Amino acid sequence: MSAITESIDISRTPAEVFSYATDPTHLPEWQESAVSVRAVGDAPLTVGSKAAVTRRLGKREFTTTMQVIELEPPRHWHVHGIDGPVRGDVQGTIEPLDDGERSRLTLSLDFEGHGIGKALVPLVVRPHVRKEMPRDELTLKNILESGATGDTRQ
Image (cartoon, rainbow, N blue to C red):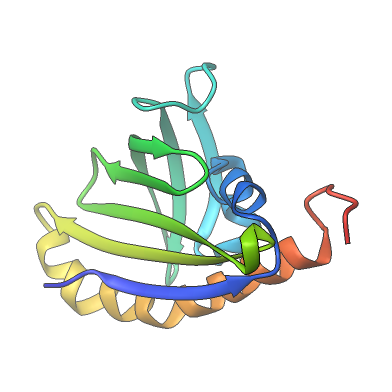
C-alpha cells in the first residue's frame, strides 16, 4: 500500500516549523491520537534518537518506540517505528514559501504490520489516520500561527 500524504501551508519559517514539529514532546499537543511521549535517553534529538510514543486508537492505548532515521534541519526528517504490532514510518518535508517567510509542510505516513498488526493496519489504522492526519496538520498550523509555542513573533 502507498503512504498517506498530506500537505499544509503555514505562516512560519521552515526553521520554526521544523523545530516544533520534530520535537517529540509536542506530539500530544497537535496529534489527537498521541497520548504521551517519553524520550529514550537524554541526548539531544539526532539521528538514532528514540522516543516511546503512546497513542490511543478507539478505547485502546499502545506504545511504540520511534527512532530518528534522517534529520536534515530545517527541510526533512524521517522516523520509523522499531517495535510493536503496528510500526509507523513518518517522513516530513518542509518547503520554504515567500522567500522563507512561510512554509509548506508535507507529512507522509506509512505502516508495517507485525503479528496482529497485519490485520489492524488495513482495517483500523489506515482508515483512522486518513481521517486524523488533515485535522492534525490543521492543529499544528493553528498552534504555530497563533504563537502558542512560546514564540512572541507575530
